[in-house]
Length: 152
Image (cartoon, rainbow, N blue to C red; front, side):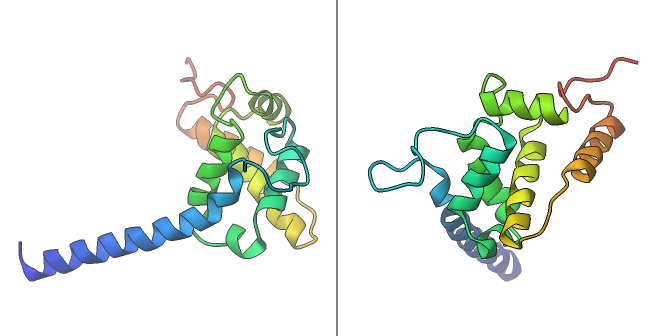
């Protein structure tokens, strides 16, 4: 291994460690806590879009939510914690029925973007993001709701 490759490997490991620490900080509050005081039962997960926005807003800060890696790192914690991958979860079913989106990344993005708008006291209209997600999947011949290939 030459010196350049070694330097790049060390750089990659350090960058990964730094991003890992950022991710751990950004998502630590998305997992139910045992004991302590909470605004709502920590084991009761949101079942609607509005409840999910409240949940995320209460568990993060604007600076965390606007961090460049948050949509990936924090988003991963949010979508996993809220059951957005679980087709049987009440929130998944709600988001599917309300927005016609079945991919956890799409629905999590709507929730996080709405929470960020709330931090800024700004209105948030999910319609453009929903349209964009549906166009994205259509471009690849995939149904945005079912995530199945569209039959020609």
